[in-house]
Length: 526
Image 1: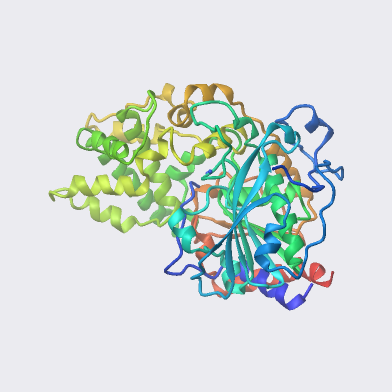
Image 2: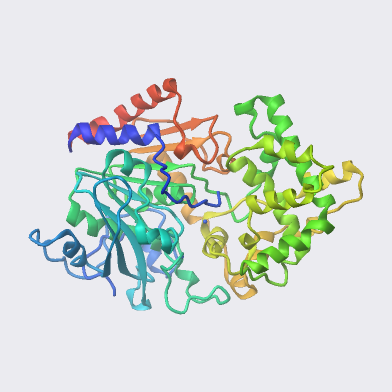
């Protein structure tokens, strides 16, 4: 490897200088759309061969034979034709580049197996955005969701923070079963195909994509990154395929302990923000959020149906469980989550609450609820439906505890009440967002979480984990492990879920500089 380029790239990663430009499209993550003709080292445990949906808990050295080794890349071909020659590629489209970085942007379609342990189950097409600069550094961004909308993809690319800073090659793969990367016949109202939506199969997708582009690029270094759910997939890639990158940088990555992990709402109402703002100021801000929620429930009759109808006009389809009353209660509850997850704009909340005598008060309250969460967030046809299924099956989700809001309404004494009762809270997210047939087909499997806990303690991968200490998703992270030479956790107590776009203070940057030095020094010699 070329020491200076690798070193500089990794320093850029942990400094997290903002790469946002006016033409970037940000995708807010909830803080989850022919068979390869080569031998792909997809690894599995003996247990993984017993059933199709078993996730290997340990990566072994035993490859799964797919097909023979491919022919060497013909370097006399153009980069576009080299991409076309990759195993599994079925379509390559050049996309206009307006990023300001000198390079060529492509949309690449790979045909991938539905089940990497049984290719006879069929295939699906997976979209991959590839930005080629010819650099000796490549970034693979594992977003965990869908690629940006088609209008953006017409003009791409949406470069990652590190790719724009270092002008390196950039790969952004759409997660299986999100966006347009779906098998024919996939239907959110049917249980068919969802058994193939596993972290193991997704890691195999990414591994194949990495292997193929590595044949073209042959870079000195690979950096694997991802934020939020993408941070989870970055960790999982390191666990399933530790040789896919020289360094893994998971950012604000939660991993809940089960489909409705406890403690998330308790943090929001009792402790979040203490380290960033101090206990007194944080308590004041938590009180502002709760006051807004109480006010919203008190004005249910004025706003509830309007919120529901707005969702219908946007194309949302709600199941029988998600009545206007239940939808509104959920929107009010999740207002606190979104407020603390992102901007933490308490001044706007205070201004609204101080305008109760204005004619626009209720309209502004409705706008604030919609801005925090569009109603279709909980529609059965939501673009996040695959996330809810994965949350139920493997990656978990937080609890939806209405008790703090319920108690605040009782103390208010206005008589306003929630429609959601304590008995309705159990698995409420999935009852709202999934069709009964799909809901009944799912069962939680803790294997991937257990594997990651073992990986964090024992991996030889170079890893820098980045968190915002005032982020709601910092609470449901995996258990902390002590730092060691190859595995560093950095927590910025002043950052929320947007730490990826935050400039660290100089003194913290100096600390991280030393972390990067210790992590990369050995890799750079190789």
